Image (cartoon, rainbow, N blue to C red; front, side):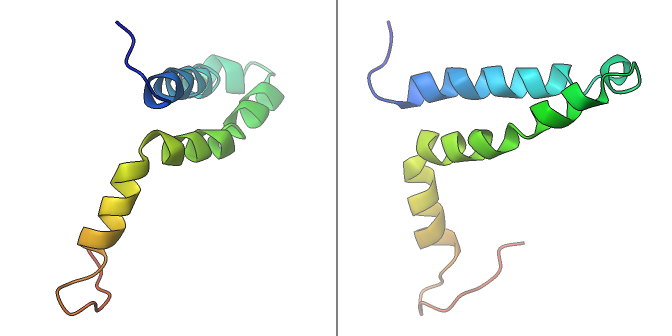
Length: 79
């Protein structure tokens, strides 16, 4: 069944947005005289990242707490 909450719905929306971006970045779209379609659909990255943050809210909290600060609360780079 469907799992409660916003995560499943946002996951479906994220998948649709990503699918649109991938399809519209195909070579036959870009070079076939439809560059505007390529351009405007790639602006969907803004709602994509907003939804991504809401989709995985607990990840961002844990990432900030566990990976950006060491035991002495000093900032360090994880890269």
